[in-house]
Length: 407
Ligand code: NAD
Ligand code: MG
Image 1 (cartoon, rainbow, N blue to C red):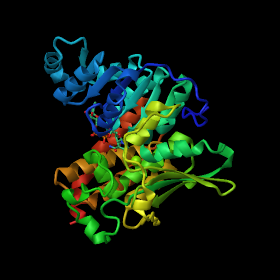
Image 2: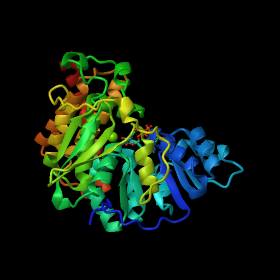
Image 3: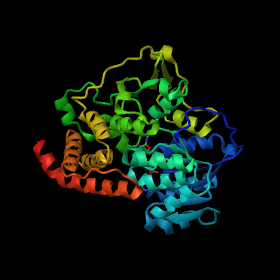
Image 4: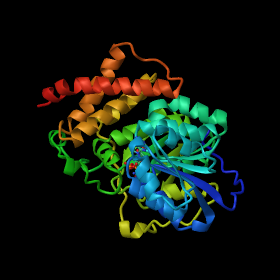
């Protein structure tokens, strides 16, 4: 049985839900805390976590009366304790404290740590059979098969929080697996949708950070400009819903109003629409199996006037093609795809490489990985993390020569 509950059996939601937010100080964390703030009487906050932002974490822990607050940086325990002195919030620090936060008995956990660091904490929540709203796409991209198997085995319920996957989750309930023909993930096309390839190659950080529709963290905004984010989402959809690469299409839709669609055998296409606001998919996960009041703007299609669509330009956005390649290759290739991209994006933010080098470095790292005979099924979190680390090292080693070739 899948860990994603595709048929809504409307199990009664308990009156007060205990919730934990992993990555509470980030962009998704912020949206989640906003929703919790709007219905304080319905939620008791169990645990909140952050990477280094102790003051932001302590402020939230005080506001919500959290039972536990954890900061990933072990050197900041003293600072956290001081900031929470006189409260009843227990404090923890280091990776093990983030995992403890996930393991504590909350009914519902938002997994919104960014990057591969989110894998072990998400698994800790999954292993105790919790309901996990999954925003962290790296869990699936780095260790998809294994992650979903472990969730199914533990009886965990995975609720897709990424907007496109949440849309598919809502639409998939309209039919059975055997009736499904394909899913369609929409993409805004990002700030370089209409740019020539030579201009995309030279794009600056400021240009890459100007997303036309969504307001998000820095890393994911750059991934949207390269369409790496859409590549990660194709992989994410494949593991979440057990779909083959051929069952997943990407459609460029600059207005970002339709987030995902599912085509069934009778040629009905069921779509989910909404203003581009992450609080809508998060509210769907928070309320599930019921619906709660969401704060996003009401969708006014008459005002928007036109919804337009384009086929994705695989030639100008090679990151998208590479995602399909990685998915078809399997056996750790998607982990390598993600790890090399994280190295490339950090180098781009640090001003060390041009924008066009991001996808080249990912391709070179994947090629090298496959040529070296490193492909093997991943069967544990440590396996996935080991591949992630080696691929990062490989990408860092290849980076100077790839950057040089591009000049
Ligand atoms: P962000 O950078 O704004 O926030 C990340 C959070 O994780 C912060 O609370 C940070 O303190 C914490 N964190 C970072 N590194 C950590 C580490 N090593 N250990 C422990 N905690 C750490 O990121 P975001 O935009 O909120 O994205 C979070 C996740 O959700 C990512 O996987 C992203 O791909 C996914 N996602 C984000 C959006 C969006 O709109 N922002 C949409 C869909 C999916
Ligand atoms: Mg998305």
